[in-house]
Length: 418
View (tube, rainbow, N blue to C red):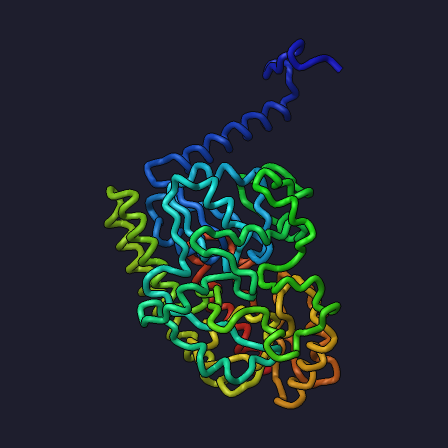
């Protein structure tokens, strides 16, 4: 092979296809640079719904970036080195917090140290719910899990913005949850960010100090369970839920009121970071709120006829949506979406389906449906699909309202028998 230094690349000598590729690559990098360094601040978001809300608030000014894209799940997500430049160049970072994606805590704190970072779990105006307990959501959960607003003096919840199914909660202010990063989760290789030109099949993010945790192949929901089937303590009282009483459900965006609160927080944060466009951000947040209020009314009307129907979800991601629209699930197939539920837990779910005459059991598009098939075996329950992230919806301002409506449609259609 001729050394590169002895044979410098020349467009004149290169095949036309190579020239076209090089020009396209250059144009793509130029477009990325323009997007990232235009007048608008460089904004990085964690998951698709949060990215959508930020897109709505920034409309007409710029576009935010996203870390957990495509079919990737925030539970156990592994940040690739090729994504590091997004955080390193960020002016503002919006993420839910370590309770949803503990593996992002250290990269955000170290790589985006100069950015304004907003942990939305602790944002003003967010309504909180306690995590539900047991495979069938033990009844006492409903007595203490509702309306835990930060501004209502629930100091114990202030300290519980942790993993949404995790006992190993370290210091929240230091975001030390990254010590539980889950490098071996293969779903991280699905990251579809437009600016990720590398296939990082090895998840080689040891730069960020994660390799030593290769053995911790747990979802960030997990309570140091090496294997649900091995320990099989899903259905033994408090051992089942893998979290402490008072821990908060991190799926906050599925309450439309929280979506509006998130938009308002984003608008004010961006107004300070970019005063020249402050009026635009605030006007966009107002327009977003009006749109979501309209969607909320449509959803309420759609779900009212099926309000008394019983259903089971794949994992407990929907409490905020259910509670807001008064249509609550009777249990979840699995505690953590990436782990296999124990035979004991599945048996309890099967009994619940029969005892309560459950109409539907819902799977999620990101995960294998076999568990749901096993759960409904021998019953008259139907199988439906709902998605808390909008995995198959195109990114942008329309994703969030579409996500909420699709969730309502998926519930209503299956519960009605359609």
